[in-house]
Image (tube, rainbow over all chains, first blue to last red; front, top):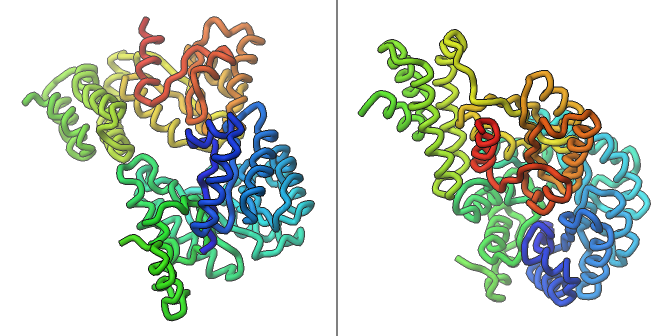
Amino acid sequence: MIIIGEKINSTNRAARAAIANLDTEFVQDMARKQYDAGAAYIDLNAGMFVDDEAEKLEWLVKTAQQAVDAPLSIDSPNSEAIDRALKAAKIKKPIINSITDERERFDSILPLILEYDTAVVALCMDDSGMPETADERLSIADRLISSLTSKRVGISDIYIDPMVRPIGTGTHYGRVALETISRVRAEFPEVHITCGLSNISFGIPERKLMNQAFLVAAMAAGMDGAILDPLDKKLMSFVYATEALLGMDDFCMDYLMKFREGLLEE
Amino acid sequence: MSILNEISINLQAGKAKVVKELVQKAIDEGIDAGTILEQGLLDGMGVIGTKFKNNEIYVPEVLIAARAMSAGTELLKPLLVAGGVKARGKVVLGTVKGDLHDIGKNLVKMMMEGKGLEVIDLGTDVSAERFITAAKENDARVIACSALLTTTMGEMKKVLELLKEQGLRDSMTVMIGGAPVTDAYRESIGADIYTADAASAAEEAVKVLTE
């Protein structure tokens, strides 16, 4: 599983305060902890700073990469802010989170993927609104993949996000997400599939429980990435256990190693 | 238990089919449509709104109650129209341009309808022009704008600017809300009302329209 660690996000109150105060220690500590817990990417979001998002995002990049050598996930729909952040990024191949098939957004972000040779999260959404069915999501994914690869973005640099909607707002939304994942997986074996895990549980109690159940189901359907909190030991334990169950962990060696490191929680 | 009370209780439990049957029964018994609406359906939805605001119930419970309410209002609508009963007021509602998020907006709609308001729902990705045109066409005095993205919040300001340009600012109340929106932001763009949750939005709209 390719984990994108979500903790440095300005919509989170503690992180927002830290970013506002340019609290280097908070950001570096959070980056380090997530990296140590198994995050492949450290997500950075300064979207709540409407007036100076670009400046804040650039500061986050510079600050985080002094602490860890993990690639960064540049979390913004704003091409100016992304541009500035990528200019400052020194480590490996960053990922842009995210592009959509909305015309304006696609056209403004594609040049940045190409210029900085990044990976990208591609959300199944276009100008016609939030897709309702798996069919609609699949055709958006299809369009995104073909338009990106036709511009020479490598297919394994694309992370399709099925655009998970809360189960509490529509009985069918869990199935729609899972069906989208399995159909994208079948049609594009080389593409990555990721999602913001916690969307599924908006508006209902005991959200962590629902997130865990969804994680297992989505991994079984073919999802190989997730934007989540890697410091949530229980959730990460589900990642390791599910990887073993899906035959991705030879002789359960990784699971056993995590156990010995004290990283598993029953 | 009175039949109106039964309607309210079943609406709160989200039982659309039972609510529909009870509303039909109440109509057959000769109870006035306006009374069924006020003391049955709106009473039930009011309880739901309060409980939701107090975090006692969750989003799916609001949605299922709202479905029960529409099952009931469907039967009442022709009678209310024939009897000349008017909504308490009209609100034009939508998610701003460039923003496709509709969950919060839909909750506001349900809460407002639950307070007996008529909601003209423009959906998502609504431009400032469309908000204002719809308000004029429908003779609505309240425009309610929702945004979930920090990148689209700015569209709310455009609604206010365009209202001023058209000389309509004083005759229109502009309400704003959504995850990144705050009261400080409301003040900075000069909107009239900010509320943090859907139930409060409905309460404020009722205040404006019934004062």
